[in-house]
Length: 183
Image: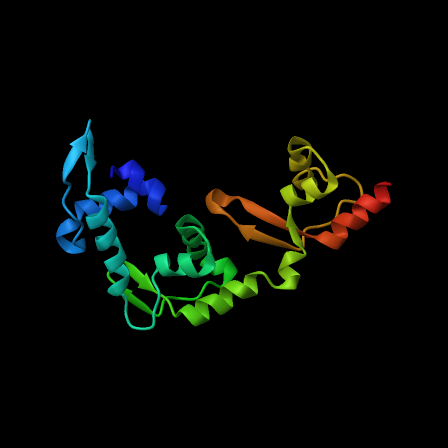
């Protein structure tokens, strides 16, 4: 398998695969068995056995990000985003760190993740979701943040994003009340 095939088959990023290979003396990453054009290739069975054994090295009772992905159905990218936004979303701290590897208590993490979908959170909409609910074109609703129309509800919260941007959150009921007032 090439890196591209490993990325597609395992949902991993190229940089992660390159790092594991680059640090193979520490990670135990298998050596390539050949090449296809300019791409290195690995024996699929050997690579899968190595990748599967990585979880076996996790501390007893704790879960790596890969295991959390299996438990939650979220992608690794989504899990990394949740971890990056931990100050605003209350993501639990890892129970153990081994070098750069993080391990969480799966019960505590699952309970936290379930709390994200609490009914109060489900009633909050981003500006884009509010626009879709109202049937507005994305290009027209984006200006509502800086130039709201008369009667547009105030956001009830904001989530800080990278680069100084913010995501405004609106109550579904407020957005529907605005729609009703417009006829």
